[in-house]
Length: 386
Image 1 (tube, one colour):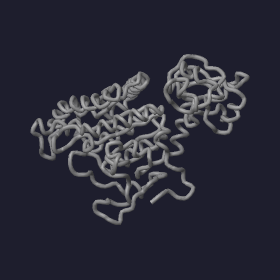
Image 2 (tube, helix red, strand yellow):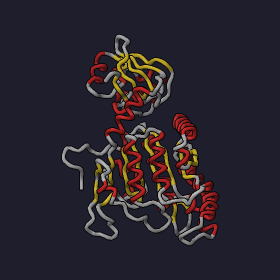
Image 3 (cartoon, helix red, strand yellow):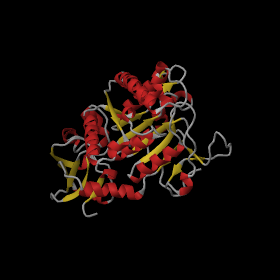
Image 4 (spheres, rainbow, N blue to C red):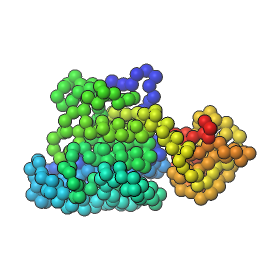
């Protein structure tokens, strides 16, 4: 099943400015050994490296702590008491962090561990602190690896906490894409394990009651998520202007250990498109709630392109003012100095100054690495007065 004629096409993974990837326990942990799937984690780390080379910042939300400690603690029965889950999380979190640190380190990347709860994303002070830490880690080139802080839970560790947490992180960090890697390649009209007539849905333009009714029961085994919690995550993400995909974590064929590469190459999945009002709300936030830290002065051609709804390319930038980092808010000024737009810069000021006036296909030669083609992508830009 696909989107109706004329429906917006699914987003390209490689075009993401900031991507949040949620990974379930069943993908991280080999249940037969109670140990990390090292080869699979290495493949995902390679995927992250490729995405970063294209200019995409990546945040990982990873389950697996409790599953990694079950065997060593003798907690092998399916249902555990709350205090047993907390004890397992305390032991397993060390192993989970180590597994990710080793996989990312092999790619020359630095892993950073954050333990969050849903409450951390809802209390304003804690939300701002967590957001500031995440932004700083990304600016420093680290890969944040986030998990639910199960060791201090005050209520039962519920199904799908990390699905919802991943959506909250995407909302918090203004990510434009969220990918939930799962044991299924997307949403079906019914549970395909029980109904052979179930049809795959490739694009969900809006979360209707009919779509939400398609959520099923959590799968068996260590995984604690299910389609129902993924649909809750989809609502959180899409209302924040973030596209979300549900994709198979272990695709068939040569890319079995490279799920993000498979997704980028067109592997079957379900994309939930961002709510139009979510994107509008984000653009209103960009336009009115940010204090610009610098400015781009553009030529007349770039000014006309912006007016036509296009992105700002380096070729049209004549000067860079101020000191700022990638993702910081900046003004766009016309040839006469008048403010034309506000947006989020895809480059730090130093790099922006070096590529200003150059064509996008010259960026790699100038910087020594390939970043975004745009100085400010149109999704991150708002015309002043427009």
